[in-house]
Image (cartoon, rainbow, N blue to C red; front, side):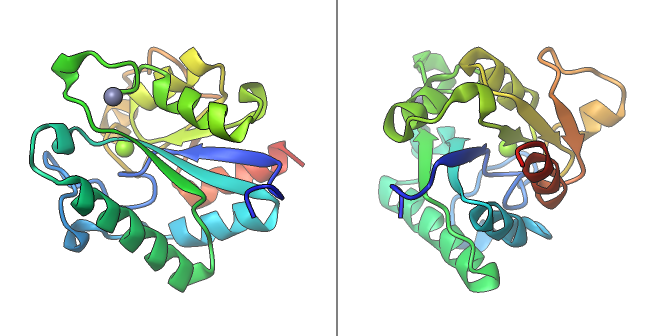
Length: 189
Ligand SMILES: [Mg+2]
Ligand SMILES: [Zn+2]
């Protein structure tokens, strides 16, 4: 399957695919609540030949709030919910598990997670969109040379709607992932 896919889209997880809990982390499958239209968007991408890669900061692992097995269970639960809802498929989850204080290369806004995905899947960053709900997602995209879309379905919607502009302006602002998918698919056709 992976070999057939020629194009990719990079998605942040919380606030893009599933609801971002306010001021806490997703630490159990009960915290995984798909956002409206997210599963359908994944299938729309797949139908147009896009592989879907997740790039997500999960400092909760570094903090000891979630085990590696717990993180795997959450990924599998999310992928299963999407598959059962729409038939959409996530190709792979890339996570940064480190504490901010560790100063790793992969915690967004650094581009390391995107670069890991690029090294494995060999996509062209200049034509590979990243969709995120946080300003730091947009910065990571810019550092990696990827176009970006801000979705207003998560953490930084309030900042955007209050008029605070992102330091790395996105190529497009979308209501949610379904809206972003429509934009990417028409821009890439
Ligand atoms: Mg997010
Ligand atoms: Zn990291």
